[in-house]
Length: 462
Image (cartoon, rainbow, N blue to C red; front, side, top):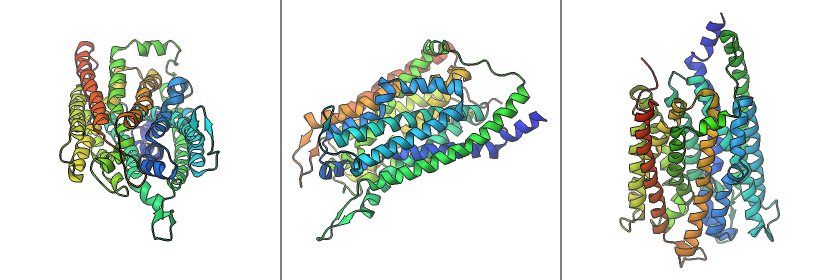
């Protein structure tokens, strides 16, 4: 009887995909806030008098606590010991708290004048809020990854991960495309008819969405509790518990480190790029600031369809390591063409963004479902946490590096009090990360042949 009940849950397509919809929506809300400030960079400079270095420091705050306080690693250990319900709910609460602090800082409800630790007070408080949010959204990410493995192991796991990533990228697309119009919608109309955007309005929208996403995850916990009860009844024996030494077992795997390095190098060439992509469109391709976010929004839009497609391909045909190599090659080509002084037209930038969207779909669709082939399930939370921790070094350091490079070497004479920038050097830096990612992807493919991980084999066994 219990076997039939469990079958109704995990083996029920409606139940599996319903669970995925709940947790994926929570991640959509998180990713909306992650990138909501990117289209606002010109407004931060003109209205709040931030410079590129301050914007880069603020953006790098995403990884402060995860990297230096090891919060992400602790989160992974807690996930393996306490389970997805406890860890996921606490991650959602941290996201809400961080978003609230970030909103209060930008809206002026926290001190604006003076400095804290050498930073403008407003920049500091916004950065701390973003850092708290970063802990929450990263732990939520590893929790959702383990939830998908839990519900889809031996089934459409890569497709499910692809759909979850696609839904999360929808949050990024919304952040890029609706943020400026939303800020203008609640802006102040001047006597001459111009509109001064309300910078904090999109952040308030993020806060509301995160509260809704937390409710969605709370609903999931009831489903998961019932699933665990049925599973323990049918199996009769609990899985061997997670032990502290499992952390060292994870870290002793060559495949784990290659996946972690590929993750940090690849994402360092994508997510920090998105933080500056809108500004790139304004400065190099002369796109209107009110429309510039629409072109970077194409990248996550493409992933809505392509990530699940490539994930489904991995499930049925395999070739995961090969997919990662192809994605890295495409990444290099796009950033190199962004760096070259040719075809400075909006349509060419749009074409490059479409190709980047394909690369951004290829690598994650194969990378994340490959981790359970290398690491045992009871250690997955810790493994994903360590990979995300390594990734956070890039998400923290690269935006600050690009901001410093822009201010130190790329500043031009702008108009109307707004600085202008030459993005050639930053794009060369992003291309360099792509080249390093290609080398690691080739090493991972070689290691797969040596260790027999099965990365080239399909996930669904006939």
